[in-house]
Picture 1 (tube, rainbow, N blue to C red):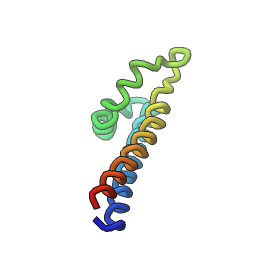
Picture 2: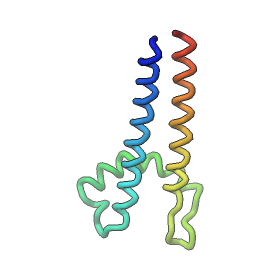
Picture 3: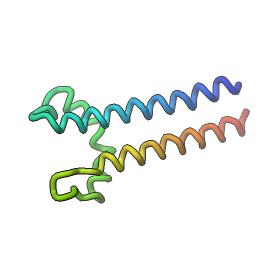
Picture 4: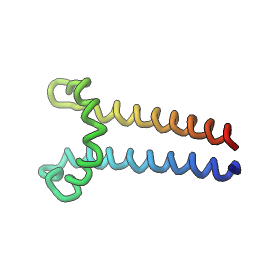
Length: 97
């Protein structure tokens, strides 16, 4: 594989991670609006984001019973996962090229 192709694949992984990050942020912002999560967009975002957020919510309780910081931890973890995935894919593709 050429270096340009490898960089394209790494960039694509980063872009997918960025899009998913924005989906999580949009879902979080919907929680501030009354009945927004019950809308069509809220339901779609819930189906895409809730499976990722659920494990974090199980282990991180809300602060004071009201403030849920688990999405912040989930976003930080997502950044680490994306960077790790990019490093592994880069290593593997460079190894076989």
